[in-house]
Length: 299
Image 1 (cartoon, helix red, strand yellow):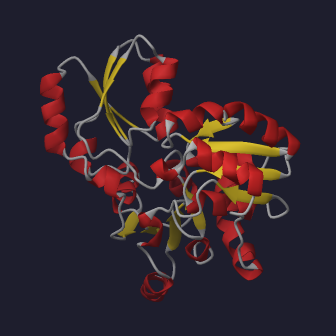
Image 2: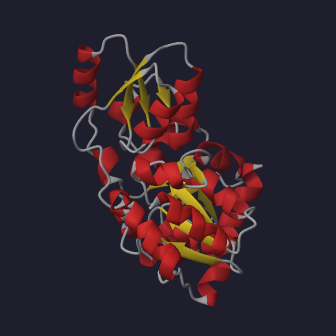
């Protein structure tokens, strides 16, 4: 199957992009693996005319928004992110009416329609830096409550309006889970994703995106870690650090949508290319702007 995938991606001029949360076998055959910020930037530089995205819907939409001339195909069109649908246009309009000077800061884990009504996008890698760089003092952060609160804790000079969205995987990780894991592994460092709740982040030795967690573990002189994010990250952590030990904090660190993506689905899409991302032109024009602003401020 792997040989057939390699053959077809060359024949069809296709690059395979995969997120750290997909199955390790899929990460192994991907041309590039990364977090949403890395993949967003990378999508603007690849030379192939087709992009096969191994991730959830909003990631494929972002790739299409930044590369309207390319064909973007999802490995599984039904792999979706529940958080992306936890905010609607009405909520944005209501806040804009009450707070006309506020910047609407949209986590990239959102639909193209929501991006089209936002001022700038952010990822977990750059949320703090992007918000700090904005001239507005008032911030409406959507849709993730936890990432918004983490950003607010790092930028006390700005006023935040929070939304009530969340990632069910990170929400399932509790401070109690982490305390128990620390008792089991007293020498371990705790590395947490900012989508986790504040009680978890307060126990963490390091807070960062998936890519930042991997980088921290790579460079650390320590060799035991408790990881507070989706378990797909363990593949890359173990590939890069075979002599280090990584522990989860509970059985629910699992995204069923990311795990829908499999090698046979990658092969099927290379054969058929029928899961293309299609977006309305008027939405694309508006939704592209906050992504491009993110990339510009991110420099």
